[in-house]
Length: 113
Image (tube, rainbow, N blue to C red; front, side):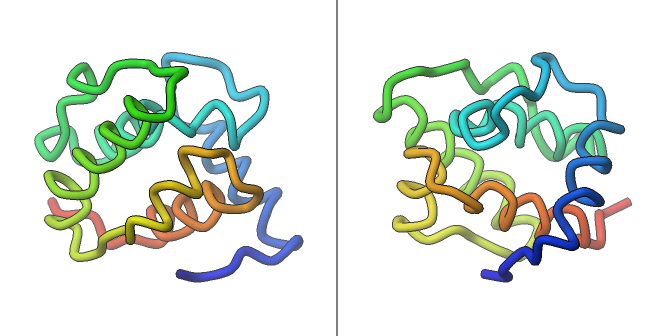
């Protein structure tokens, strides 16, 4: 997975700020850890690809991992990339820079029309 340089972070955060999300972004690693906001980002660009309402907000690790696995199998596969089990556990556990790496993949994705 691509690393995100410090110079890229402001552009990445600005891109996310331009997408209407159901929750405000306060702590990006924590806010995106349950996959709900990532599903909303995908739905913003390709509404037919994901039903964002199928992903429930979660505080527990098991539900977060479930949401990420669902997104990985049903959506990311159709976008021609996938997250490993370690990637999913890292983002669900709010590991620093993990969500930024995933968002970078999405930002530069060629979205289906």
